[in-house]
Every structure is written in C-alpha cells, then in structure tokens.
Length: 374
Length: 227
Image (cartoon, rainbow over all chains, first blue to last red; front, side, top):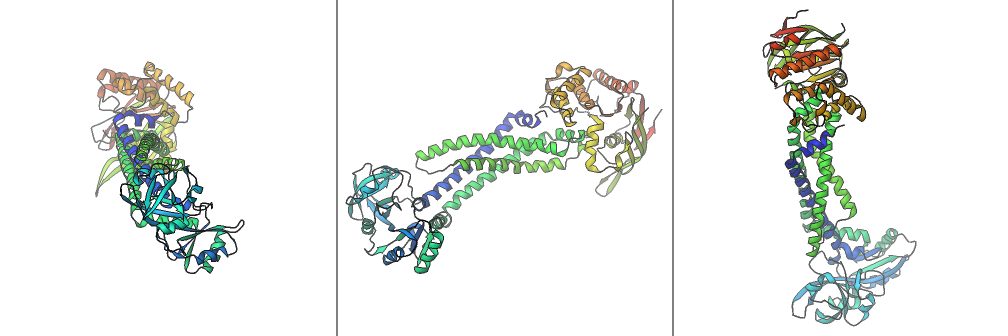
C-alpha cells in the first residue's frame, strides 16, 4: 500500500514535533520516575539482598532492616543447634553517630558482621579487604559518602559514638535509603558503637546446610523460636522495601509521578492523533466510500500511533539517558535496566494505541455519505 | 445493452428529530453499460441521494436496487463496502484526493485496495494516468497540479480496477467551463470506449451535449427520462 499513515504523520512537521515532544516528555517522566523508584527500592534492601544468607532471624514484629530490636544471644546458640543449619552469624544493624575531624556529626547505620564469614559483610569493595576489619577499631565505608563523612582515604581517622576509628576500605554503590550511610565493622565493635549489651544481638543470619530447603528450615526455626520472627531473605527484603516505599510516602510519590507521565502521554498523543484524524476526516470518508474495509482505515490510524510511539520513545529514551547520567553525577540513584527499557517501549506503544482509540471510534462511526456533502 | 443499475420504486426518507423528510418518493431508473447519463435538477431535489443509493452508500427506505443483476437492497450492511470496492468508482466535486500521496500513489492506493500486487498496481496506475492524459504527473503531489488535472487523477482512480459503474457528483463544479467540458468529454469516452455505466450529477446544462441521456429530478421524483 502507498504509505498513507507515514505521509499523514510526517506531512505536518509542526504537529509531528508536538506529538513527539509529548511522547518524549512522557517517556522521560516515566523512565526517570520508575528509575528513581527502582533506585530507592534497591537502596532500601541492598544490604539484605547482598547478604548471602538464606534466613534472617529478628526480634518479634520486625518489619524492616533498621528497626530490629536487640534480643539475647542464647537464640543464636539455639539456631546453631537446629538440624539443617549450615552456618549462623550474629549480626547488628543499628543507628549511631559519626563525628568528623571538624566536629560535625552525621547519623550512620552501623553494620556489625564477621569478617571471616561470607554472609552479611561489605560487598563491591574498591579498596581494602574485609579482613582489614580485624584491625583495631577498623571500619569500611562507601566512597559515595566520602565527602559527607569527611573520610577520603584509607587510614583516615574519625570518631563513632566516642570511639576513635580508622577507615580501612571503601565500597562502591552501597547506598542507604535514608540519608545515613552504612558503616561496616566487626560484630563486637558494633555492639560498642551502638550501645548493645555484650550478650545481645540484632539479627541472626542463617545459611541452610547443603540440600536443606530454606522454607522448611524457616518453619523449624520459627517453631523453636516462637518469640522471634524468622524470614526468608526475600521475605525480609520485600518487607523492608514495602516499609520504606509505601509507608513513608516516598515510593508512592515517585510512582504517582510515573503514572502522571503516562496520563500526560496519553492525553497529548490522543489530542494530536485526534486532531490529525479530524484534519484527514474527509480522506477517511473517501476511503470508506471507495469501499476500503474498516480494518485498512483503522490500520492507517494505528500505524500512525505506532510510528509516533517508536520515534517518541527513541527521543525520550535518549533524553532520559542524559538525565540519568546528569542525576548520577549529583548523587541520585536512577536505575535503568535493559528489561525496563524494553518494557518502557511496549508501554509507550500501548499508550499511543490507547490514545488512538478515540480516533478509532470516530472512524468506525464515520458515515461515508459525508463525501457528498459540500 | 447490459443493465448496470436498475432502480425500482425507491423511496428515501430522512428522519430529523421527530420530523420525516422525504428525499425520494418512488423512483424508477435504469442505467446501461456503455452510456453516460446526466442527472439534473434543482438543489434539494434528491439527485445526490439517488446517486448515494446507486453507489451503495445509502440504503433506501423502500424499493429495490440491482447492480449488475444482483439485488443490493437484499444484502447486509457489512457486505456493501466490498460491493463498492469491486463494482463502483466515485468522482467527487472536491476531488477528494489524498494530498500526502502523489497522483500516481492515489491511483495505486485504489488498485491495492482492490487486490492488485504492488508492481502491477504501479504499472496500471501509469496506464490509467496516461489514459486520462496526465501520465507525466505521476510523481506530482496533488497540491502541485491544477484543478483539471486533479479531477483527471480522480477519474483515473475511479476507473482503477475496471468497475462497471462510475458515479460522479458535480465533477465540474470546481473547474472552469473549458476544463469542465474536457473532463465530461473524457468521462463520455470512458463510457463508450470502455463500456462503463457513467452517471453524473450536475447543474451545468452545457454538458448535456455529451450525455446519452439526461434525467431530470424534482421533488424526489424523476420528471423527465427520455430514451
């Protein structure tokens, strides 16, 4: 067929520019807001997701990572005595205060782990080694927070809750959902930094023995520890994510902005495609009078929508990449995965198709006899 | 002569609110292949309504319409577009060409809708534009050609795919008298040399010399139909 859809779309350059701007704006809004949501989400649960543990045991009614209350370490030994437990680890995540050399104080989240264990330690290390945590009063921080914590190099000395500490390593990309950075240290030292009694723990991380089903082990541990909550790692991650994203309002805000982007896109595309349809209404009437089937006429409209979606997506995604790059320089965490990019393409096409439905309805009810009127 | 269109006791009423307005009040008309019929009459007499019914665009309130011997009025609404596509070509007062397509592509589109393959449609579009005398305008956009040339493109599009019937609504109204005469002469030639049934609605009495028959319509009735 002669390319009627393409010609109609490209014929009016100004209208095309308006259409593509609307779609691109919508794509940028959706990509950036969804990327922010993903970034927030991964920040909220990164420590849990990278823990390498199968199960997390916490005090009763714990809903998120930073909330856990201390409980007696006897529970740790009960865990060790449970059949099916391959490895268990005492673990702490608690707030404390970091004092810079200039006296400025920052809130931080102390993570107390075992440098010899593969569970719950620092990850994405760019300098230093977890074993360095065995040095007296050693900590590992993320380089993203170097300025905030005023610690820029290995060997820098600061103060946590009255204890002099030394930076022995840096990680990369371990963000905190809150403004308080994570500080890795040993379990014993974390007890001091966070003022927990020597016989208390915050969490027990568990690795199931080879061949043991973690879900079954969870049930057994929950039976033996009725005063604690036992989570599969994914469950605890979901619970923490849900808390930060949906009870604080942060997640809803960015999701709403993404939905707003979708609505703006539908409105802009619907308006422009409808205006284009009305401009060419006599031509569509002529096609119907000539005997063209509705499927062909609708195909012209839908092709315009699909072409506009594809072009708008390319423009929008290009702008989004610039925005994301610029935002990351400023410290924002906007994630854009390949699957998100692909999903966003189909969402953009769907948005344009939905927008075109208004015009489709107009065409379906168009009386071909209109061609004889004036 | 083969009967292309046969209309028997056709009436058409338009309903506007609670008021019924009769447009056709019992019309009988036959148009044969190879003849050009001019349909004339004052505005509001029912000419265009009759043309629309012949073209299977409007359904009559009562009566029968036969196209090439098949009763159109017995067909379902959804089958009529296919009948129009195969048997009828239209020429409109305002040309109704697709401005974003070239002259050739306008004709090609009609041929592709009728099932021609791409290459065959292109060749046939060239032949048809040559037939109406503007072969050299194949690649011109309709905005770049004159009114007379536009109407020639519209005629080439109407005869694309060899429909038995060509229906034209005021095809010369937007043209100067000289160009209008040329267009009607061309349509008369198509009727005679290609054995089509051509029906033209017009107010222009100077075109009567080209017609094989002139039908006068007044108040929804055919008042004069010489043989």
